[in-house]
Image (cartoon, rainbow, N blue to C red):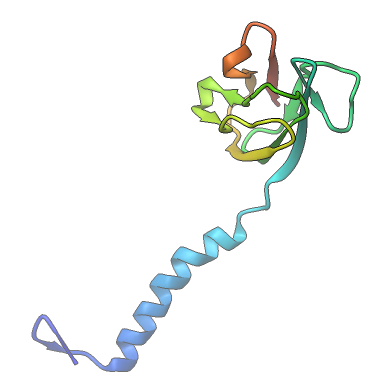
Length: 131
């Protein structure tokens, strides 16, 4: 085989191709799985599935963590979403008895970020605390 007029063995080309592919795939495989945080919407508020008594809770995450927010809508007749505007991330509008999710790459810098339901932001808002 000839590349730019230089004779190169097919074996060398195959090794180079495998190296490039492995270099692209291995970092993806090494990425830790996203921690799942299930949220339920009912009564015009967000609730952690594990704590059905605290409306619009503070969600604790670690800097640099990958989290998967799973939003389930239990509000009959009302659509909701989940958005963290400063992180440019949101779940699409979810109808009653449906769910959707979004994976968030948490910033490496600790801080507090507001999350909201965009159509109902006056009532449905909480904080995402990055530690």
